[in-house]
Image 1 (cartoon, each protein chain N blue to C red):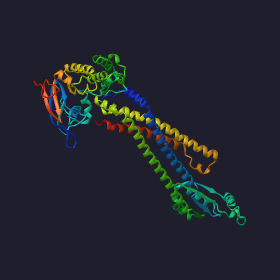
Image 2 (cartoon, rainbow over the protein chains, first blue to last red):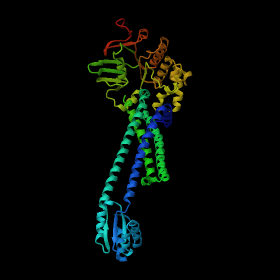
Image 3 (cartoon, helix red, strand yellow):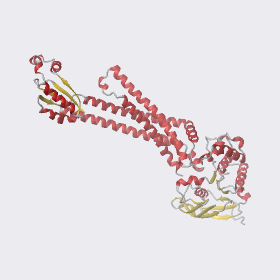
Image 4 (spheres, each protein chain N blue to C red):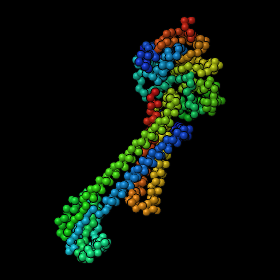
Amino acid sequence: MAISLEYVVKETSGNLWRNRLMSLAAILTISVSLALAGASLLLKQGVSTATSQWKGGVQLLIFMHPSATSAQTSTVEHQLKSLPEIKSYYYMDQAKSYQEFKQLMANSPDLLQSVTESQIPPSFRVVLKNPSAAPSVGSLFQQQAGVKDVNYNRGAINTMLHVTSIAQFVIVGLAAILLISASVLILNVIRVAIFSRRREVAVMKLVGATNWFIRIPFMLEGMVQGLIGAIVAAGAVVGIQALFQYVIQHFHVTILSNFLVSSHDVLMTELFVVAMGIIVGTAGSAFAVRRYLEV
Amino acid sequence: MIKVDGVYKRYKENQYALADCSLEIDRGEFVFVVGASGSGKSTLLRLLLREERPDSGEVWVAGKELSAMPGWKVPFFRRNIGSIFQDFRLLPNKTVFDNVGFALEVIGKSKRHITTQVPQMLELVGLHDKQERFPDELSGGEQQRVAIARAFINKPLILLADEPTGNLDPENSWSVMGLLERINRTGTTVLMATHDVGIVDSMRRRVIELENGQIKRDQTRGVYGLGQSST
């Protein structure tokens, strides 16, 4: 049977306005719940950015012999370029390495004086795509001509991987719990709203309205509420993110700067929040009206 | 038009709302269903509207067997049945016009059809000057007439009335009965559950009396009370 668009629009807008207090309650519930869920998702992104930056520290050091020929050095460099496990690398020549050595050993002038620039080994500082590949990549270069030593800190890498996976797990769990409780809360508000209109549904059934005829305006109503709530929540998430950024920039909280999220992450989170709002609002209304249709 | 055959219906264990109830009503009849509260009148009407299903037995309405009817067919079945109630059951947020028009809107009638049909129907029930009022601005009698207009606008085969005069004073009750008679004269079968002794006694129509879920009496030109008359 045909359901006229005019009927649906008129019915939906009329119901939203007539039950505006209930609509407002539903919208606020959706905004608060989704803002919390969205913020925690963003935090998860922040943690993963931060860990990838920590991971971005050098994980593998390839020390060349100070006397290594430039041919040997370029062979190693060539090999580094071709390995898929390697994210990036840079070469520290003797001059730069000596500068670094001087800085590190500034407190031990005796040691400084005993070492000259020509004794310092130049090195490749390597960043891996996955830090856990350090031992296998390292062993490739161990026997290479001109290579003095390969160095990586196995224990530190493992600890870092362990800690970040736990942090991610906890935050994803938190976001999931928030999303589930948000859905339950939203559903309940919609149910209360529809309960107060069960007589209306009964009259519709009495005059021979099909279930879809009754359901569609309710679903559309839930969708509008979900959409408005989600937009408010998305605004709140952007606000929280902007505040965070402001705090970092103006108070120079360097430890937090690692948590910065990209605008891509923010956009994806916002899209997720809006999609959740629409889905929960629409499906929730359909679910809530269901029991009053069974007459 | 209506045939109830050996119907049992219970809501609680060992407490039957209807027990072995059988009756037959022909096209165009006007039938009163009387009996004390809890005698099964409302259950009978709910079965005929397919708001309930019998535990056993068959319910035939307008050529359809209701206990086996799948749920999705029920709305289409109900479009052949008009129903009015003691509590009117109007939509409080819709005007008189929209309440009556709603029955047409639901079955997908065009706006033009609605704007011509509804005023005619309201004219018939004497409320054409109150089209834009809301139900709570009307008297009980007027609200029931709106409900009758809504029930009859689809020209149903059957009109079910569950104590339609229960909340009305005698004058309004009689105007409602006048409308039901007019509807009956168009060939619509009317089945009315009532407690109103005066109306039943003076109209002298077929009376079915229920007691403890069973048919106690079925008279073609009956009265409300017991054993006074039979034809």
